[in-house]
Image (cartoon, rainbow, N blue to C red):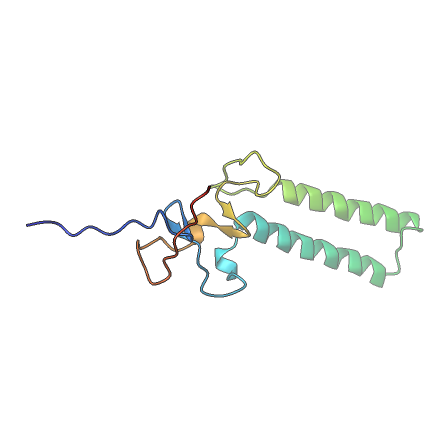
Length: 128
């Protein structure tokens, strides 16, 4: 008796290294986003909050104390950004994406595993 095999989805427009790129929601859900992007976003928001707090205290760049405080916040931000790591990070050799696991703003490993031929199957155009 013959065995039934799944049809491959390698020719599908939405297929990328065993995962399906079709997003069920737009924009992508936060749990599917790249870890590095999420962490940088959080650090950026915290940094902006700290800088706004300086303004509320009346410290500006014209004041020596305001300049020192702002410089401290920015240096702290740089150290935090440098400390971010992802266990799945593999250098792509490009500016963007910096990791080969990143597809747009999402992480390939957080996407659904491709089931093979599915209702969303779309054939890739052949390059001429």
